[in-house]
Image (cartoon, rainbow, N blue to C red; front, side, top):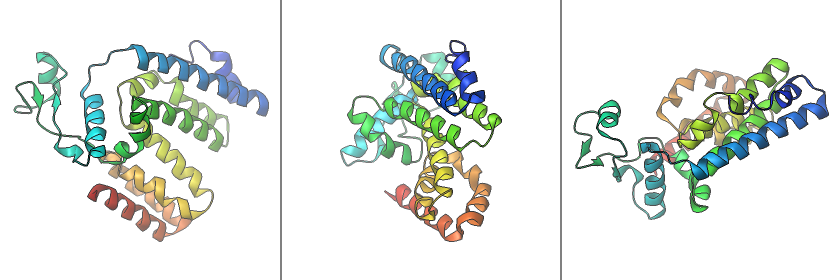
Length: 232
């Protein structure tokens, strides 16, 4: 992978080192990933519809119109169009539907959008999620799994392509962190998680764990947050 192949020593220290050495190894890994991925974001030219949907959706939302009513130019050639879109989706070089995901990602990406590129939020999400997962780990196996967020073969790709998953992983990490403290804050990241992408519904069985730890009232509050976001 991009980071671990060049910094196996730091990865090993982050997993097997003592407290101080492990923290140092983690910081080195995160800095290496941040620099590498930031370079890709600045220099690489990515032709993918997700990026156009995200930018167009945020722009529409900030101007008071629906992100689901926008259209975007088709970024693909004929072969790519046949691979990614069904008949009638593209007309005269324009994709005929708007932002295809739930709204939490749009809201979370606004600050980075205003700074020039929503992907800075996605990069920050990967870094913070990795740090939180590493902190929450209770053994070396958990630490090693946490590092996969920056050591995986597609770690930079998910940021570069503007995919929603980095935000989802961050929201999941924040939910688990909140579950260890006051139940007051659990519903916020949990509700945002379920309002981030359609397949988040597959996480529904995990709500039993939340209910056992903090009660069904917290679960209902998270669902209220989800409904409010989708209605807006």
